[in-house]
Image 1: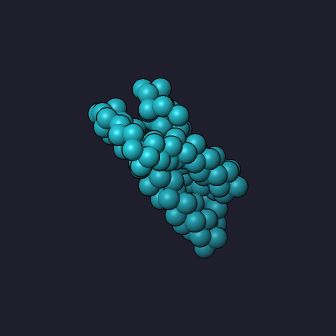
Image 2: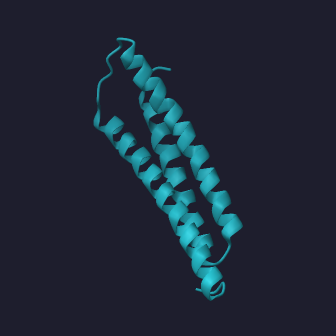
Image 3: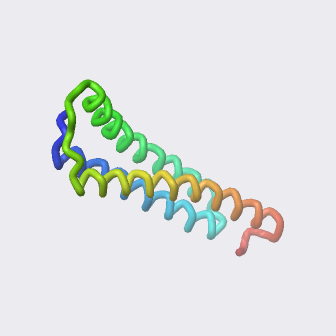
Length: 109
């Protein structure tokens, strides 16, 4: 895969999708909809995987001796991906926490 604006925008797209899905998971858990919450987090993980595949291809290309320019757009894409990964991990914790709180005090929070 060639390092183009299009591939960089794909990382941004998948990262943004993942972050949104993780946040939807938190919102569902807050309502006591734990199955939906976990499904949203699984969907977020799939979006992160798509972005990570593109990132890995870019890294492998550079490791193969083809230096790539580090543009502001690429840095922005990396920020989106890392943010999505962090939000997904935190969403998993929030879902667990909301479920535990629901178990302790009823499902209404």
